[in-house]
Length: 66
Ligand SMILES: [Zn+2]
Picture 1 (spheres, rainbow, N blue to C red):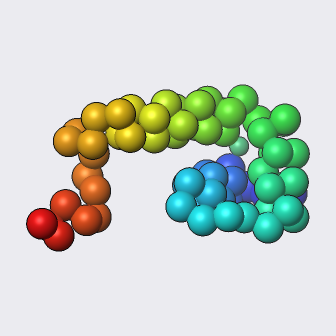
Picture 2: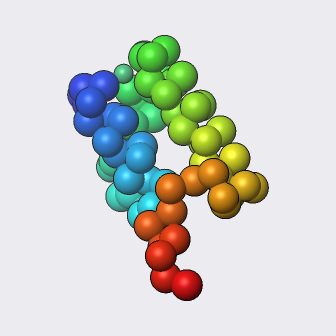
């Protein structure tokens, strides 16, 4: 069973790289039982969508590569 800390770390990693099926399963299981992490994931994907839509407001690592 993952802790909330592990779950949020895995979720933010999953935004940048693919997780193994084991990790995805563990995250899913945790989310089933934990409302706080469900909210976190919701906010995370919202932010992610917003950042994609308005690239200027996000702190992109490649912003100096012009
Ligand atoms: Zn949690």
